[in-house]
Length: 253
Image (cartoon, rainbow, N blue to C red; front, side, top):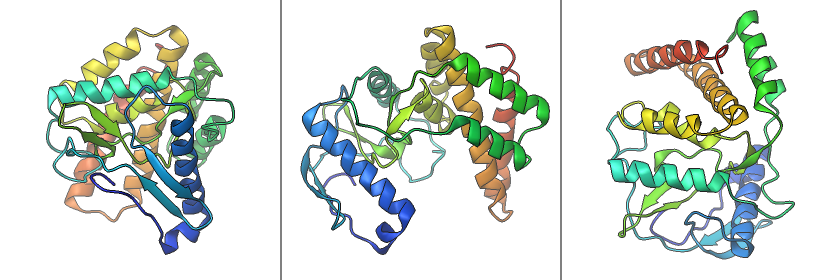
């Protein structure tokens, strides 16, 4: 939460999934307190995992977007976009201490799940599995869900990154792929992100393409589960277009 000290204590925190996410966020802030990351984050004041309490620094600033929409309909300020991309690129090069950011995705299991749920056909599943092999096994620290609403633009124009409950180690380019996915309404976003990815080694480029594909499959699954409505149908059509475009890259990376 931006702009004030934070205390979180809800019934949801007692559910296993939310308890795990809350623990992940506390671990992230405790890691930042001992090994500062190359991005601005709220300072930790106090944390108590057992009592579900997390107190962090008051951050003055504003959101880079006007709404809480996961897919912002308005274009971001170019300076805010650059600051966000710089933060996520720097985070991916950070070396947290051993034992920190232990959350890691099971990519083969997710690919198999998406295939069994009918989100991919056999050829696509094979192409994604091959791309996973080309991406390699090196994982890097990542925010996990760097939506625009998880950034606070400070008065000096820099950004502070908040909400670290999804933090962990991911394939390179995961955070950039999240921003690529959700910032379709910002014309400069995708070209800038793709330029950053193109400058990386072949394994990292493969990882970036795989990340985009898996994120789009997740969005397709989530939006298909929502009852039909004009906004849902429009959003799903845009996601499907992105999926078909990314699918063309599976054999070229």
